[in-house]
Image (cartoon, rainbow, N blue to C red; front, side, top):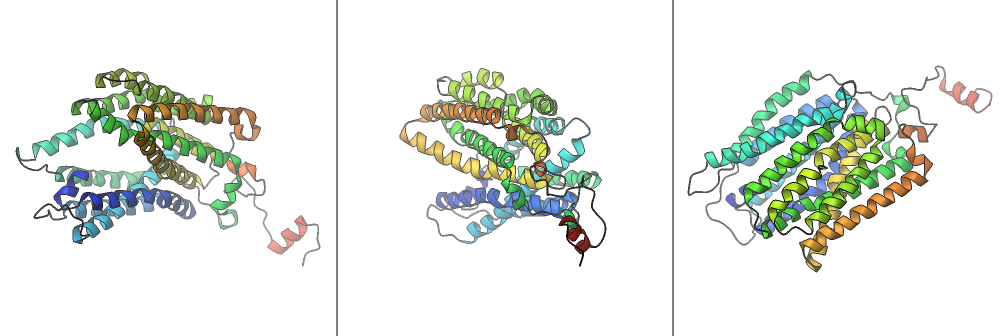
Length: 412
């Protein structure tokens, strides 16, 4: 999509405004979609609606007309407003699918080895289709002309068809809360374990935020060839496959907090080594030896959400995790990374984030060891005995009589 901006006449200033607004959706959309999905107890219908509108917005973006002449001064004309509206819709529905698909896969995979085994296929797909998409753009672009950005759009829309069919076929046993059992999500915000999870995911979002664009800029400063960047992405995905595949077993035996501590330790070592690299080809052993990436983060977050969520609140907790990682964490991390780079250089930034990763890991480990309540492995509803969930036997009878009996008062 960034390639398309120049073609349709979007200036640098207009692009900056668009890319400032889009991340704000991660603050609102994931929690909202998660709560709605849990409230109606049907992820499938929301998923299908999102897929249809995602494909439609993608097609409309690809159909935006090219500018007759390139602009350098922003005038906020039709192209800007049309792209902003369509891109906002695209990102909103894409975020919705990410949250709902993740929750659906977790529910389906719970009895068949966990979320990580399903995530492996996503990793393999990324290894295959990322370079293939670039090859298609080169194939359908004129030799001395502008890059043809439409093949990726058409390929993306084509994949929406089997996705729609598969979502229709998937039977996920989603627990729908009965009216007597509904509690607003804010009721659980008093849970220390929920806030502990939220702050951990924010911390990880901060640490991962500098991979793009700052790592790419640093890589370019070292005169790294473009093919090496693609190779590093493929290598990282391949190295992560065993860790992603066995993430459920790791969560069961070690606990999801230990998985997060592994991430902090891995990022500490990775950023420390990157801060000393002068030859771009030395990134290969760093990426090969330190496997933890976004895929492992996704698995760790999913396993944590599954462990913490009361029955009927899975998508809500996952939406909260997505808000922490992709919204709050990445925004704070990019601001912090840019500020440190502006005060020194890229090496100072990576070194600082290495120290930050170690510090956060030590804080999390200390709190986890010292606070017994944070070591509980049951859903957060157990922190509030009064909360009714699907494991509670509901008392049948007249409500006034039940309340009076509980208060040792004569019935009215």
